[in-house]
Length: 117
Image (cartoon, rainbow, N blue to C red; front, top):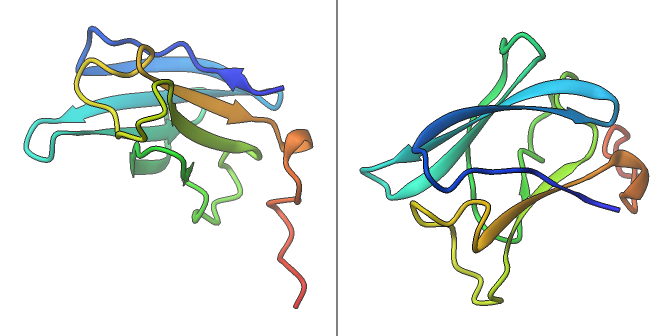
């Protein structure tokens, strides 16, 4: 079962502490006025950066290309609740666009192991 992260639609820059797969992380969400898009940073419990400037886009595993062993083991995916597949605007996070986290046990493959082939 995925976890729906409690995002805010009323702030342009904020932090959120959340436990993912049993580990506490600090997530920062920042609205970029020039690009008109949201970015997410992932930090450790103390806020120390793990991965920065992940653009929040719909239906894509956010941060999945990172090979940083400190990243959460599962997967972040932003979804458009209206099925229009539109990336989030300024006031859309937590309202029209939800950020889901799928725990590592829910994933069809183990993201920590390389694919055979």
